[in-house]
Image (cartoon, rainbow, N blue to C red; front, side, top):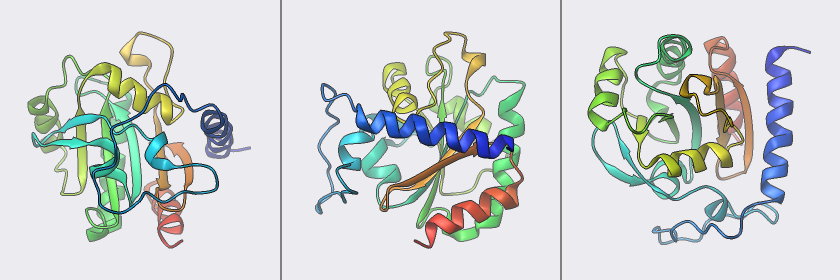
Length: 204
């Protein structure tokens, strides 16, 4: 079994368990869009994905679910700007993914990098980080309240119990919010492999 296959299988089990045990005590803010959120089976993504208020590297305040991933194919990873090991490699790799996906990023595909260090990663710090890599439109680096960012990680099945921020996951979670199909792969997987997987989901 390859590392990618093992990660996807583990992620699938985690997401299935998480969906079955969604914390009913946490109700994200109601959807601000005019149309009802799509439901896949018994799963309503609008009540699963946190609709917490976050701030992008460009300073915009947006709702994570309503304004970033709803109705799109989303690629989501976790990082922090002062990281010196996995993050620079993962970001550089995902730059190639964004280039290969072209102008679809920002239309029906969105890329989101969530900091695991909200106390240090202000929008200005994330903006400097994004400029270092020449990030284009359609890729959002986000920060916010640490508890809200941890909730996003928990709902995506990648929250590490360790308090050390350097122990964040190197996983890229990607999926089609409309169809409810989600998977995961190492953020440093070959860019062409990631692109093929994303486009398969985007075509459904």
